[in-house]
Length: 162
Ligand code: MG
Image (cartoon, rainbow, N blue to C red; front, top):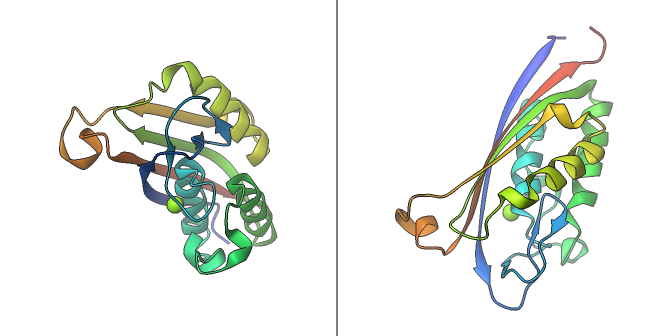
């Protein structure tokens, strides 16, 4: 088995009035939420896809189809825990993750450390192994117009038998 595997994940969701905003397992009170079948945690979804990608285990849609009522309103951190378990069973552990969140609002900086701590706990790694960066799209394109949030994630997996 190789010692390391890298994976990339991407997700985007549009804003929808009347929903809670949950990013990286942290609720940001008073902010407009995102449209989605689950809790629409776009950060966790991109992270899941980066982990599944690194382990070549498919994608979030094949594991948790949005046609399945089991995942309606689902807490995405539960999906993440199940993916951590699956990756573990396949012989991998998380080395580090690096995530970029792109949106014009809300301001992410006040929440970054809380989100990092939360993701680190879910992944079972030190917070130093979880990087999370927020930026705007400089008002360009749909994300720049404030229509939604986009997230890119990369994950390094380490072979546990190395
Ligand atoms: Mg999603």
